[in-house]
Length: 112
Length: 117
Image (cartoon, rainbow over all chains, first blue to last red):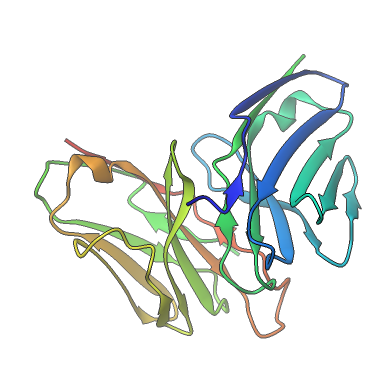
């Protein structure tokens, strides 16, 4: 059973606009969350993380929001750029050094 | 640093054959992970090692799959006999532990695309 779910397989956004990628989880023990980005023919690369003691973490154009009561996190990219076109995976773990549970990914296309 | 190195990048084999995937983790990393990526299930953890010791292999689909880590710089994932449903991209990742480096972040290799005909 998927403990981390990304219900939108794909998303298209115009360049310069905001991209919002969503992720839901079921395990209330998860306390560390990450987003990974994957280009074709490459491995996933770490993008941004957040621990459960925070509800927001920002890194440049990327912001991750965590809503623990809803068991929901989202990744905001603003402004979106064509180079952001990739598959984005969210992941969760119980503690930062433990097993990650990944979602199925959302393919983002930023249209120039 | 060269990053996590996986070989081969592509493997095409026939059903029933043995397949061996290889991984060299980042030097100094203590944890190593094997994942399988499919459309339906995304990135599934198959097995992971801490300090060369298998910690959790509950994700290994069945007895046809086995993984070893004979030393800190090398790991293999073997499928014997292979079946068409094993076709997927297999990723290896490594992570530092014990406070060295950014704990919790896994660094992935480029993957091995396996096709079993």
